Image 1: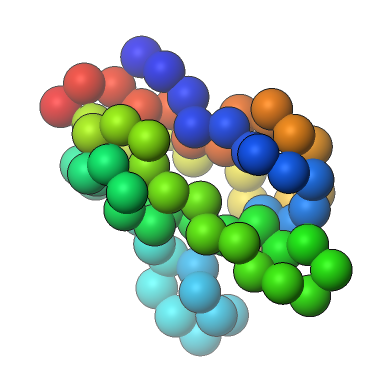
Image 2: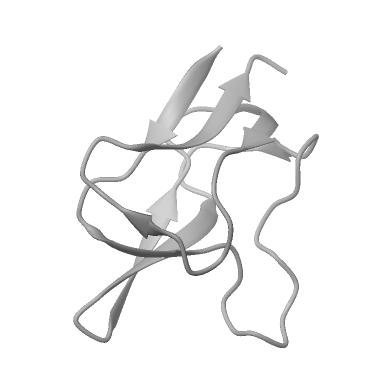
Length: 79
């Protein structure tokens, strides 16, 4: 198992807009480069992309949680 970590400080979001579906849910298989979340920094939304293929085994934060660089956001296991 490995983790996807925040690259910058900001506010974490699981969905592209409040009325939209989450990018991923636990148990979903993702591919390298797939958008799996957002971090908002100074009104700019930065995509969080999967850096490996695998299954999202755990989502560690909720919408609106503040994050710091290096903080784990998702746990990913081999699919």
